[in-house]
Length: 382
Ligand SMILES: Cc1ncc(COP(=O)(O)O)c(C=O)c1O
Image (cartoon, rainbow, N blue to C red; front, side, top):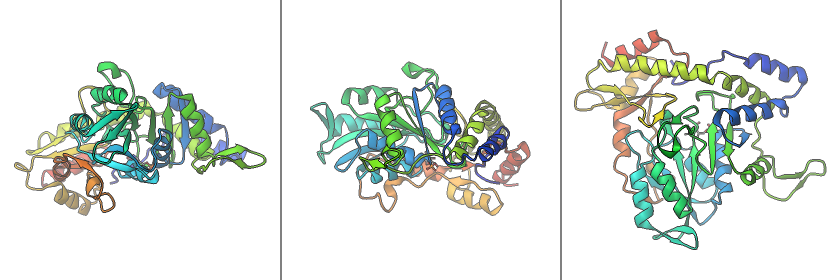
């Protein structure tokens, strides 16, 4: 049983056949259609589809001015892609702790900005390194909308840009505060989403850059297309990237996006089944989503009360894998990864503890009740 595999229930084959029939594999009309559908669903002005979520993050950071001698605030717990994107842009991460929903800890981030930085000539600088802090990457992990209302306000005052990584939270929407009715991925200056095969919808591999700024949109389109200034005579006035999404991938993505509400409903149901079964096991629970948002329930996170349950997450994942269940640990904290240990961190004391007592349970759109019962029986020691 996989952690998260895709489900194809809609127009995927029909659209792929059309690509082949028209002989439009690399370029073609599905790219524009997919981008239009994303914009409409998320209620955002501009969308640029790209080859994957990591490429979207690379470009998003570049567009807000992340470069050498600048710094980016980021969470310690996230898939490594957003951290790598900081390094691709030759900048330095400043690692923050996470809250109990495993997202960037808003209070500690505000504490860092207020105590450890200074504001000069309309920019924020790190007191210790004197480097400019360009942006904060907010990653909404496992479908949980990050708690960012106060942070958004402070960053606006300090001219620190917000970049959202909503790769795992497509369909998650805020319910309260001035973010009410906004989808994750539509709040920051430029945002990124992945359509990797393990996400709530997939284009095989793919991603999107989202923004409300025409200037960012135009530059993103240009950079992902090898910075091509002239299509015929091949003039390139900047260093570009071959980051375009293919027509074939966009065709799959469009068919998947047409089914997003169906997938979200399925996800809610899967979460409810897990919850009802796990709540009966002493020392175990399912991490609830934050009350201020509607969650897309991408992955179900098992929380272990290690005083009441005999195994920590590492032992439990091993046991599940041995029984053919591809559960996974929470990502190893990034401030402890070999290549990142030398970078600044601020008051991190929760990340490792959460890793020890939380893990990811298989949560594919098509997981059956029978499969969930099999998993919960193993957790129950049966
Ligand atoms: C939070 C997050 N950001 C970025 C990525 C990277 O996306 P991709 O695999 O499409 O490059 C992923 C996962 O794939 C992710 O989970």
